[in-house]
Image (cartoon, rainbow, N blue to C red; front, top):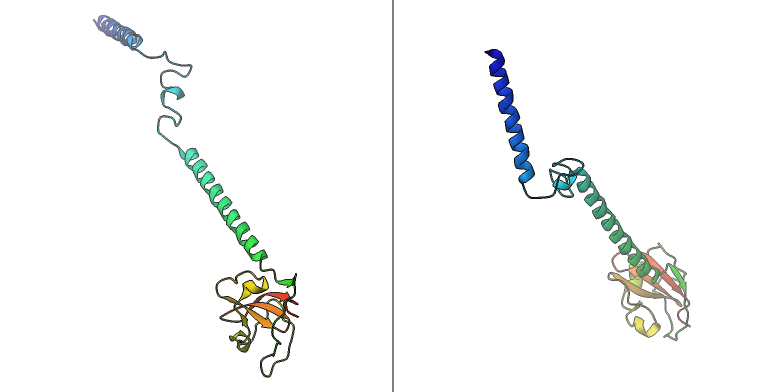
Length: 171
C-alpha cells in the first residue's frame, strides 16, 4: 500500500510538471536567453531591483565633476578680471593734469601693493572720479582711484588697502 501511494504521488507530480512545462511553452514571448527566463535581459538595464549603488555613485561622480568644472570656470573668469587690475603697472600713456599738492604734513612718496593709504588721501581732493578720461577701467565696487604724485593708486574705500599702483600716469 505504501508503495502504491508513493507511486501515485510521483505520477501526479510528474504530470503536473509536464503540464506546467507545456503551459510555459505555450505562452507568447521570446524564448529564454542563456541565463534562463530571469536573466539580465528580463529586468532592464538596472537589474531586478532598480538602480543600484553603482548607478548612484556614478551619478554622484558626474555631479561632482560638473560642480568642479563650474568652479574652475568661475576662478578663471575671476583671475582674468583681476589681471585687469595688476598690482603694479607702468602707464602706457601720460596725461596732463593740474599740479599735484600732497596733503598737509605728507610728502610725495611711492606706494606699493599691500600698503594702507592714510584717510586724508581718500578725500575728494585726491580721488579720481573721471577715470575714463585717463584711460582707466572703472574701479571695482568698494575701491577708488587716488592720485599720489604722478602715480595713480587703486585703494579700498573703507580701509585704504592698496591693490594696484599705476606708475607715471601724469606729467
